[in-house]
Figure 1 (tube, rainbow, N blue to C red):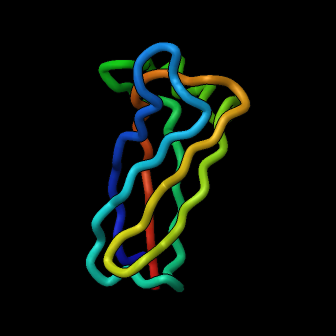
Figure 2: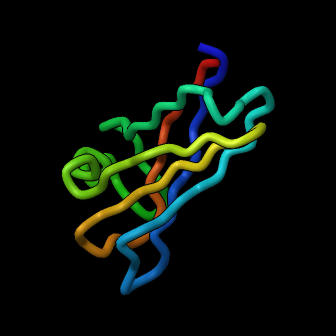
Length: 93
């Protein structure tokens, strides 16, 4: 594993959105880098409790696109979500 960290993905204020993304600067990432993202059940943000984070995986799928020295975590849901959720990531070349 080369890098780890956290970011927040924000679906905005009410009425929210079905899609959100966050771009993370990460020196050494290339388009062929392997990146994984997930939500921890005990996390919370100013917008959402740990209970909300436990349900997040049922409501939203996360995918990642790597570029040069950065990657973007995309969240997509069939339901409109609001506010920010804490996302963890790990990447390796």
